[in-house]
Length: 193
Image (cartoon, rainbow, N blue to C red; front, top):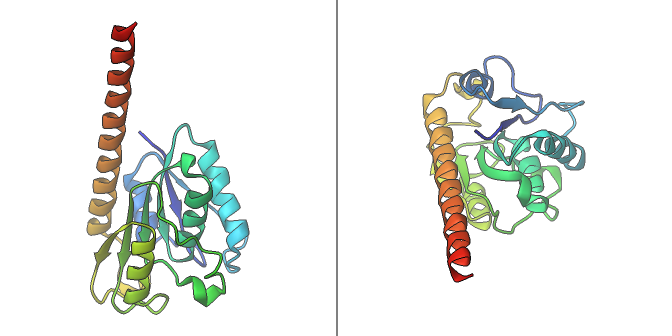
């Protein structure tokens, strides 16, 4: 089973946050901690995410929130070999942090889901739709769900677990298919010899 990296946004995710709740349900999860949760520095945050991804035994499934989504995308863009899949919940608008030009607008090579809200103060829904399209991600609209955090009522979040579990299953299925195709190619190669 792949390691799941939980990547909080600004100020971390406290004990009542859905990410903290989700961690209790995922035995292989690892929280990415930042030295300074109050300073959103994309370079430093992405370095920490990459360090944790490199420690894992195999490619990781990233579960990110807010500014943590931008750090996750940065790592997935420059080191796709480390990333099995991404669940990006309420990504923050890169323009709010003056890093829009730095944020990758290229398709991500791993299966990606963007979960967005129609009334998120940190990213408009049209902005989330724009980035989801750029990253070639599935877009899930939760409706008027705020920033999908504790303040907007997202502590225990069964729908979030369903989204995660579906992405994990899809990733495992694609890995099995890829492994089967590889074995098929090897068998054909041996028959040809």
